[in-house]
Length: 135
Image (cartoon, rainbow, N blue to C red; front, side, top):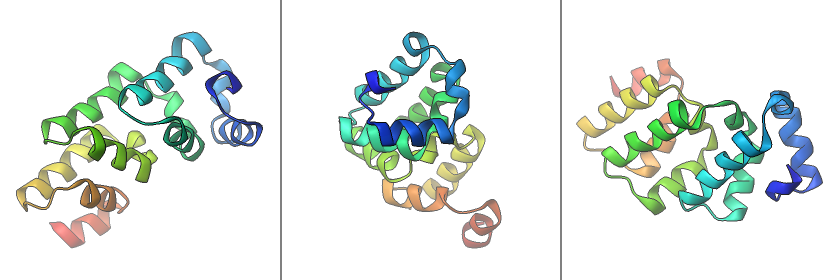
């Protein structure tokens, strides 16, 4: 993890938050995930924050879980800086189920209220809170 640019404090937090990392290949899984975040436009400080806040992201498949969520955002017109704001503001977005993300995007888009800020806000709500406010 230090090879990925994390300091000792962050490495400790990441391992404590996701001990399954010991079973992951640095070359085949961890580095590609970090590179993918950088390719999305996150700078080193934001990548560091995302990893520190949500180390579980290393447990998700890039191809089957992470990339499809970003594709959903792009299909709704979100681009570079907006995606960066969503991931920086709510790293756990990457851990939300695709079904939950798609539903909330659909509801917010139907209300013409879908923005990077509103999406970050509604993704923090429980299903019951979301339903009470928007359905």
